[in-house]
Length: 392
Image 1: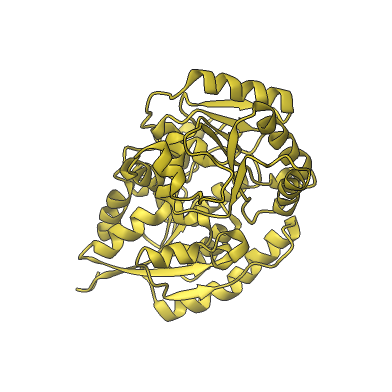
Image 2: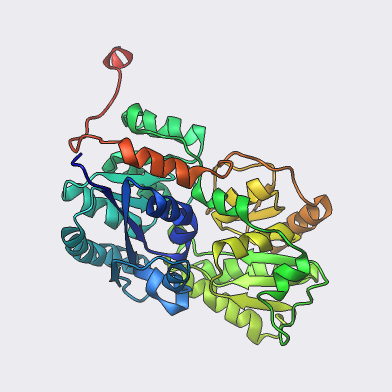
């Protein structure tokens, strides 16, 4: 490398992206050998999906580029078209910024657009959270990004082994844990009253002295057309528990309009008197709520990742997190309202679970930045395998 700081371009394209990469942004910004570049893109720029760019800027990060590339509709075709639009727009930003490495997060359609653009432009691509197994189209997208990427930061040991099993060079596979755990580790718990009072004003139906549920459910892209029924079933189960709840609006994936319709119908039917609704919260604030909630319900990976570290009782509904690694804090259930309610009651009765370091112990951001300072993978990738093992 020339005698200059290495330019690391991190693409933040959704509220989930930001939660999963914040401590990497901080560590790269603060590292004397690195120069941070930030691109805010896609749903991170949209109010209806939480406008994560405001959280990004409030944390002191000024985007070097803002790239809107969401085609409205929240259908499978929308995801494909948005990916294509991202491929039209991202190369222009990469040409201007000339990064040495592009960092892309996890398994979304915005993520694969970033990986394709970087790979075709001969820019080394670093990928976080590869090697995981789950439901939805995310499963296929995640593994495709692994094959496009040059540097891998899986979050668990099993995920690292899967990445290597896909033919990736072990020299560029680094099991560092998930950066979202860094935020969970440093979240200041405070009291339940404090955690709720910070986000539920005097006109809120939420009583900070009483226990509460946390609900976050997204559309399942491979089950498009069923989101309304799925969200209705979850909210019906939550309502039957008789406990107040914080309910979060879904992400931008195909089917999110159906999920949002389920939430609106729930409100219009007068079933949400003890619920408050949120579009987005800073990740550390969300972690505080996870610390104090009686149970987290839905299909967000946060219940498995941060939930494992925090010991949050969680009910994972349906197939979106199917076969994903998790700690002892998670119970999986079907979409049947009675099954969901039974699982919620069991988790409430159990209470907090022991902390699990499955997804890391709180140092991922710093560890990733340290690796980025020295790693220099070849642009030309090769499939790594043992020919002798294939004989016969």
